[in-house]
Structures are given as C-alpha cells and as structure tokens.
Amino acid sequence: MKESVDVPADFRVELSKIDYTSPVCKINVALDRLPNFEADPNVGNEPMPHHRCTIHINCENSSMISEAYQDAVNGRYSSNPLIEMTLPSSLDKTIAPPGHHVCLLFTQYAPYHLKDGTWDEQTKEDYANVVFDSIEKYAPGFKSSIVGKEVLPPPDLENIFGLTGGNIFHGSMSLDQLYLTRPTTGSVSPGTPVPGLLLCGSGAHPGGGVMGAPGRIAAKDAVRKLGGKWRFS
Image 1: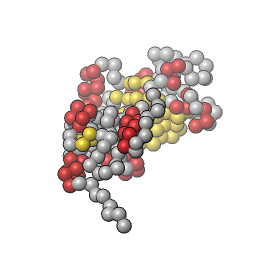
Image 2: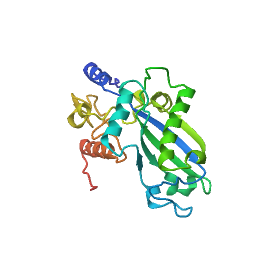
Image 3: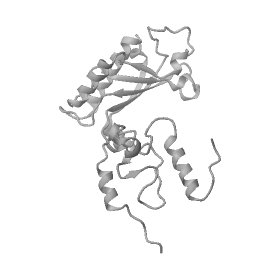
Image 4: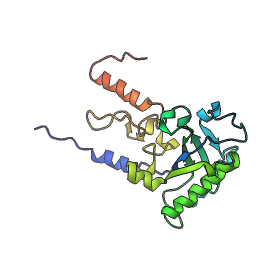
C-alpha cells in the first residue's frame, strides 16, 4: 500500500501564520419590489441598468471607508457601514416570485470578535437595522419592501460554510499575503510542498474575486506537470 503523504512540518507552521481576519457581514434580503434610488428613480416596474450593476453605498469618499474600518479595529461593527449591493433577480427572474427580488448585501466593517458582546440574534438584528437604515437614505421605501432576511456575520460564515475566520478569500488579501507570498512566503501557489497537490482557490495567487484566475493557473500547471500542452487562450 502506498504510504500517505502528510503536510511537511515547516509548511504547517507557515500555514498557521496566515491572517484570516474578516471584516465582512453578509446579508441576504428578500424584497417585494425593486429598490427606488433617489439618484436615479425607477421608471415603471422593470429593472433599470443600475439595478444590474454592483451598487456601492457609504463610500463617497475615503474618510467614510476609514471611519468604518476604525470601528472594526476598535471591536465594534460600523455605525455607517460600507455596503455593496447586488440584485441578481434583476437579471434572472427565476430566483424570485413575480414582482419580487433578491438583494445581496456585502457589508463592512463587522469584526469576528466584538468588544462588547457577541454576534447573538439581537446583535445581528441591530446591525441589520443599521445597514437597512443606511440604504433607506439612498432608496426611500427600502425597509418597507423587506419580506425576509438572513444575517451572516464572520462567525456564521465560518460555522456554516467552513470559512476560517469567516474570511471569504481563504486568507486576508493584504500586501503581505499577495503575489509571491500567497499563500505563504515559503510556498508560491499553485504548487505546495505536498507532491501532486496544487492550490486552485481564493487562498492561491492572485486571490479572491469572481474571476477564476487561481483555478486557471492551477489547471495550466497541472497540464504541464502531466506532460500536456495548454491549448486555451
């Protein structure tokens, strides 16, 4: 029987030093109508071009982002959070009942550990209201359109989806964990010290994001190792 290959001890030490700090609270919302933004009011009931984009709120200037970040550094969720909103039902009508919509919110900053308290149901409810109040300022009537929600702070992202620290990128994308130091300083992805093991997820170069680049790089390397030739541009 072939002996199993374990992760080398020095590589284990390097992996243990990866920073998985996550500042993200994900909120999924069900709506009974499209958000109506004051900056570009709705015309009729059909989605407009901006409904099909990623909508950013509370980031009109860098100081707003900095203040939100400092809240998390001090162990609090942001009182004026940075919000990225998408409305996938504006493109795919099969994921919501007629006239209704799915709203996905990627919000920052919400630390894993809170200085005063934990992410219990009341805390999640309070934070969701902070987020909804922010959106209401840009799209009056948003709060009254909510028919359901799911609030996923970092501990829930870890417990439900197995994301260490709740980090959706499999490791923070800070300058010390990018390029030749992703995933570690001693191991440049997609290769690892474990023979035949390649990394193809967000923890590999060039990191997270909806682009598929880590997988493409790993696939090309696998083809090369197997003696083949990469035929795709």
